[in-house]
Length: 388
Ligand SMILES: Cc1cc2nc3c(=O)[nH]c(=O)nc-3n(C[C@H](O)[C@H](O)[C@H](O)COP(=O)(O)OP(=O)(O)OC[C@H]3O[C@@H](n4cnc5c(N)ncnc54)[C@H](O)[C@@H]3O)c2cc1C
Image (cartoon, rainbow, N blue to C red; front, side, top):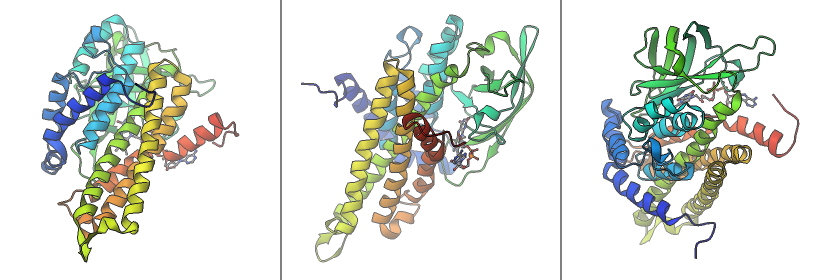
């Protein structure tokens, strides 16, 4: 009998199929691509051909007709196999969801099928250097000029722009009276005149790069605007809740990978008599603790995704935040414990775990930091005064 704590049969089968495909690539493929400046394109396109990248998108536009819970399961499996596809958080989850929910019929037909099969990668740009966590302060501005929009401003830490055909840019149509953000979303082709990018060197090796973007009077046609210029914040959250759910699943997948590696090593590494190091509670207990934290975090993203798929955006938002928090924590803790379990080997390039220490930290910072989630929970879940 199915209980509410087991995934439906189709998702279990989906996970198995993704595991098989991602397992063909695995951590070695990613490490090789990262070291040589390569990308994950081969795996990305194979995932797309198999329908895995667009499982959440509507069938009539080339997707799988599933939900965010399916897409997050796909991402978790790729990460658990050591080959996480970071751009899944962005292209099908954020951009695909926003276009599905806010786009016109024409826009859905134009972008969703190629987002689903992976041939069109859409990056997402909201963050700005001077605004940081306070997105209300973004200054990238969209001004109407006849039939066109003119966008000017700068973005920072935007992932995968070198691989992307377009960026879904969050600009503001200024509301001078309140200073409140009126977000307006535009699909900006990466070959647009007036658009340029600069790579930000990061401290860990990954095929995906981050960029500062410069928008200098970029002219876009009227139909580049997705949703309503006066539509308000909900249009943004149609994409940001999926982003947080995916962030949680991404981190959980990373934690699964790290825990598996650590347990494997703890079972075979033996330095005292005949016992493996895993026989010592100093090694076993931290691993057991990670297992518990991991299952807690996975339940949270599954609950957040179920709420989002059921259309309960408000409660989904609360749980998506908590899921992202829990995922970020367990990924950091799991990679730390995995490195420690490996002793000196944990810090070698060969074992590939030290690089993950930095990568896992991303889950505490982006897309929304641990502190901003605590602020949100304190205020919205607990009714405490706003602190910022
Ligand atoms: C690898 C990577 C990829 C990214 N990809 C993208 C992308 O594709 N698109 C995109 O738009 N953005 C992207 N980002 C940006 C990311 O969303 C931001 O880094 C994040 O929102 C935090 O903003 P910030 O870095 O400006 O930190 P800041 O806002 O400067 O915060 C710095 C520190 O202060 C804390 N802090 C800030 N305000 C408060 C407060 N009120 N109370 C308590 N503590 C507070 C924060 O928690 C944090 O620890 C990416 C970032 C990274 C690192």
